[in-house]
Length: 476
Image (cartoon, rainbow, N blue to C red; front, side, top):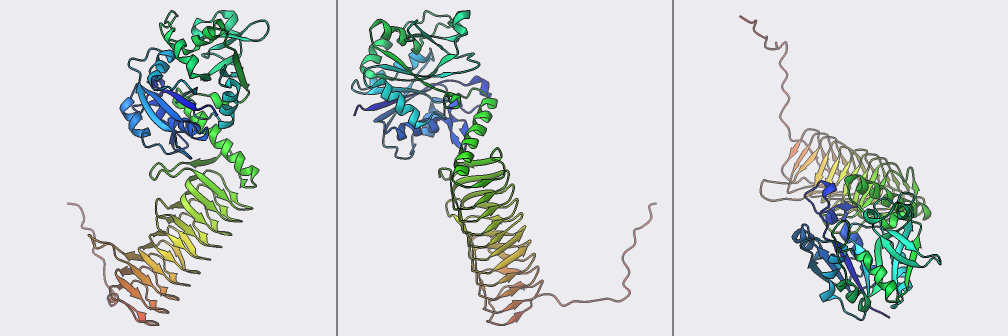
């Protein structure tokens, strides 16, 4: 098998993005555009990937040096193009690192959605002997290099839009910017490039005419999916690609049987904090309402229902659970889990380390952090459980909190099985509420309680008969 070496052009300034962030580091589905392109090098099992940087080179290289895509076993190198004198000049910078025995695949760092199967077909078309171009027919080819063919249909060259005649601009088959070419042929062609054109730049596309002159076959692998070769030059184009990418993911899920209320209002993203790739694994008969965002790895068991406007990151939700609208579940690195048949929300928040058992109820405006709740436990209204271990069938009252932080350290609260915590209670950790106990509403508990005990800790009520409120003094 002929080795593959991937050359990725990532030196452009991206002026139209109007951003301090280099264009190739703009994010699509939570991941930099350049990382999407590097994924293709991983999928193709490339020997090496050479990233050609320029504008924002230091930032681009720092953000990419630790790239670990799926099966990313290739050798990652960086070369710099300074100044930027065109696409041909960019690829020239990679020549010292390009072995002569392989096939070079040239990609663009701002074209994120090319499919691995498409690139495999392109490499196969090259076959280690031919210059293979990835082309696409566009209804509006403005800005793209046109594919020029002879009367027999053979590719004769590529004419850049700015250098094309009116007749050539009428051609709708365009060059995508992606090619596969034997490195032993590419290197001498690059050495022959000139900048005799309207832009005064060194065009990589000029090697097509050189190949024809040298008798090297030039073939075009034409596709119909323009999304695969769409680049990003502006915030509008980035948003358009984001929606197209999300729709592609949504359709794949629906083909597996997932019910999406509206595939146009669905998002699956990488987790930029933890580096976890966006992945949604669904059992049978999962239903997802509109405007839900899934981040990192999320597992939804059979029959799970996700209400509208939920944000769920790095979590496992077991079969039959119902997540009501506007719920926020964020497992981060610690992960979060919801047991079978649980009812969560609306307007609930599960933070990292929240581990909920079967039939647990978490109601509106309840927050759970680094806590376990055993089967059947309930916290239905306006409550906080932080660093707590909650037993089976506990009923946790509205307005109650675990005071887990003393200003320096976190402490744990243990609420044993069948405890009833009244409304507006404060459990000052470390403390244990014994099994079957009851804590009266409004109590502040600072000491552990015995099993089965009623604990009340609040000021004695005082009522003063016929008391008069203070009166507002008249203005002078």
